[in-house]
Amino acid sequence: MPVRYPRASHTHHREEQGRCPAPAQPPAPGRTAPSATGTPVPGAGQGPVVVDTERRVAAVAGRRLTLTYLEFELLAHLVAHPRRVHSREQLMAVVWGQPPVGDTRTVDVHIARLRRKLGPAYRDAIVTVRQVGYTYDPWRRSKTG
Image (cartoon, rainbow, N blue to C red; front, side):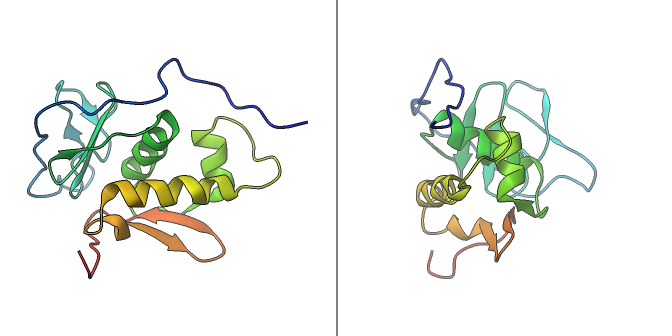
């Protein structure tokens, strides 16, 4: 029997007009950056990737991203926990809301899509930890970008 994942009422987050400013510097250690609505969002101001979970908006270097529901949830989780290594199983449990059943390579597919949407300059901010999973390094940039 195939595994079914809960569906969200909105499957895509449409790109809005305008630009989102990216923070110039990371917040002080142990602090969180305020979102556009004024509510602290963990990791929201670390590096060029900004995630506002209340408005469900993500931007990289001021450019808003068009993400699916799960892509947004995955990016928000990684950005909220910078430099922490997440196994595929952990990401399946936290982001998908279900324990991993069978193949966890769906995480790899979503990571690949996120990297593509981050663009050539910032795709390396999501780092593969071989045989384990992934981590987010907010200040890591691609050498080619």
